[in-house]
Image (cartoon, rainbow, N blue to C red):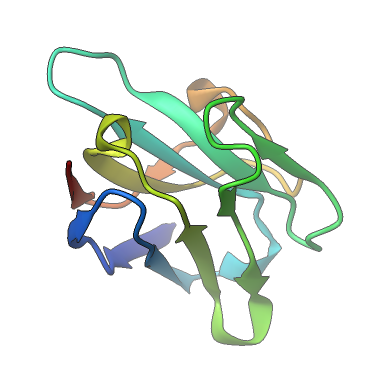
Length: 124
């Protein structure tokens, strides 16, 4: 089992930055691929970014390319989502997830472990 706890959400003005953190605990937590997903009201949850356990492979949704990055620190069992140049359409509940294997994946069905979510609000 892997437990995930997100933090770092909040209110930010458009054009600003936020960094989300996801602390993982449990057996071999640092060897899993990790992903960030988001869900806005009335919309389906979708992939934002993903990273393999070594950090050698990453995936970004087209809507966040060039603005968001997903670094990880395996010594701390933590993955981050650095969000820059935020837009009102980035507002959502952001979820951290751990994959069932070490690769990155853009598919939510590849992630059996989920955090509780953290709210990001972007004011225009």
